[in-house]
Structure formats: structure tokens, C-alpha cells
Image (cartoon, rainbow, N blue to C red):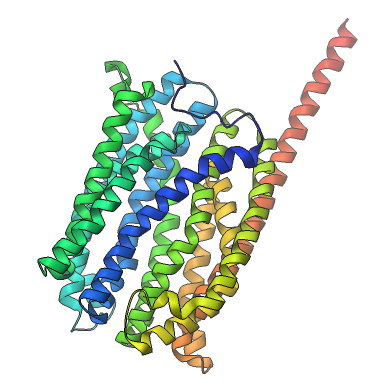
Length: 466
């Protein structure tokens, strides 16, 4: 089968390959974040800070439901990448087909659950009564869009597994521009409030998914499946779910921890909620280069694991860790100097801007640990280290639930406990990621040594027989 529209990452210089592959991912992720930024900036500026707080209060709980689907999506992508790296084209095609069945089923399940449970969960989180109706509306619209988002996530995860990070980008850029236009129309001209912002995002994401998938069917030979390849394959589906469920657990635990932290934020009132929403949106942008390199490393590690090239995985980890450290330093400097100016893009209220700027100066000190987390996560998820996902999730839970209780009750940190907790949790997670990577590397070294010993003994036996 011709391998056009794909990238073989088992040969060539690791950092150069990863940079080329990650650049479209970064651009795409930035445009994806533009969805959230457009919602937040237009809602905050054209309506008020309470509307911004309502949109922000749904973020962590929406992430909880999305995390189940996203974990399964990640498992499907890694399995496909391993088959591609091993040059098993027939299994690649079967993985593409079976991934569609798995991801559609999980997206319908999680979207339905989120829609039904929206009022109950937001009530549990202590969402203030004055913003609760808008928060429920926004979350339910987001929940209804999960199957639509699944179309894009499916297409992009399969294309990335094959080394194609550009195709999803083209359609995402178009849909992002459309999203901003629809936001201005629905919120500004039609005065539909947070419903209009959510509806604009839903329509735009549908376009990105449908366009990317149709283009892949027409241009990528791996998507041209015959009847045999379209058949349900129990072993491939089982492997994808087996790998995806730990990833889903990892992201679910992280989501639960951010939901718990959001509950703490809600207890400090609307100013803190608006400031937290603004800083979260900004730090989602900060994390995009890290996230893009992490996704690139997952594909890179998956392909090289399939090809048996663990030496290349180690080289990719080393090079990316250095690059992410430099990038983290630059972003820290930017937040220290321009925090208030950046928060001011979202709201006009002075008290929110001042609190947000101070909060960014706290969290930005810990950005280097974000780089460590994403690089380690990309490699370990790519090689299929399921236990790492569990460890990473537990650390996030302990940090975001335990630390606020200690800081609020045992110190005078007050509202700043929110952002101190975020930073220290990154630090703890970063250390756990490094320790797990070192453990994996030692294990691979031991296995390599055992294989070499067996080969050596076999050769000695052959000489003695001769």
C-alpha cells in the first residue's frame, strides 16, 4: 500500500521529525483553544463577568465526561500507530474501522450521561444560584456536541497515528474562523447569551470533523476499507479498549481533581471564579506547545515501539525534554511581566484583572514541571505503559483535593490556595512522571540485555556443535 499522506517516524533525526510533526498539531491546538477563547472573551466582554464565570464553572465537569472518550481515542490511536510502525497494513486498516465503532459508542454514552447529570453535578459543585441557569445551558449544549466532536477526534487520531498531522489542521482553521463569526452573530447580534456561544462552537466542530473525515476517505489509501476490513475484529478492539481504559482513568482522575478544585474556587465567589476562568484559558494556551509535542511523542513512541526501536524513543525523550525546558522558561517570563494585560483581554472588571495577574505570577513558576509531565506522558502513553496512567491520575487527585484543604485550614493563603495548589500539583506530577520513565527505561534495558544474552548463548552453542 502506498504510504502517501503518512510519516514514518522510525527513521531520521528524532527532534527534527517530532518538530515537523508537532508544528501542525500546535497550530491546530491553538485554533482549538481559540474556540474556548472566543467563547470566553465574547461572553465576558459582550455580556458580563457573571456569564464568563458560568462558562468557566462547567469546564472541569465537562472535561470529566470528555476524558472517558478521549482516553479511548488515545488507545485507538496508539494501537494504530504500532501496527503502522510494524508495517502491518492489513491490521492498520482493521484498526481504523474498529476504532470508529469504539469511539462512536463511547461518545454517545458519555454525551448522554453528561446531558442528564448537568444540573445535579453543577449543584454538587456549589455553583452560585445567580449563574446556575447559564452554567446548565452551556454544559448541556457542550454535552450534546460530544458525538459531533467525536467525528473530528476520530479522524485526527487515526491520521496522526499514520503520521499525518496536517489534514485535520486545515479543516480546524476553517471551522475556527467560522466559530468566531458565529459567536459574534449569536451572542452580539442575536443576544442569545451563553447558549449562542455554545451553539456556535457545536456547529463549527461538526464542520471540522465532517470535512477532515471526508477528505481522509478520498485521499488516504488506509481509509479505503473493503468489506473484510470493515468487519468487527475482537482482538484489535480488545487491545484498543485495554490500552484506552487506563488513559480514560488517568484523564478521569485528573478531571475529578479539577472538579474538586473548581468547587473550592466557587466557595470564594464570582470574582475568584472569573479570575480562575481567565487564568485557566490563558494557561490552556501555554500548554498547547507541550501538548502538541506530547501527542507527537505518542505517535513517535508507538511507531518505534512497533518497530522495536527503543533507542530512538530514549533519544526523542531527551531532546524534547531540553526543548520543553527552554520553552517553559520563556512562558514564565511572559506571565511574570504581562499577566494583568493578558487577563484584561477577557474582562473589564479591575478586581478580576488584578487577581488574575497575581495568580499567573504564582503558577508560572511551575511551568517547567508542565513540560516534564507532557514529555513523559507522551512517551509512556505511546509505549503502552498502562500503569503510568493510573499513577499520574492518583497524583493529580491527591494534589488538587488534599492541598487546598491543607492550605486553607493551616495557612493564611486564602484565595491564593487555588493557584498554589495548581502549581504544586504540577510539580508532584512531574516528579512522578520522571520516576516512572526511569523505571520503564531500566526495564527495557534489562529486556535488551536478556535478549542479547540469549543470542550470544545460541551462537556459542552453534560453534560448539560445529
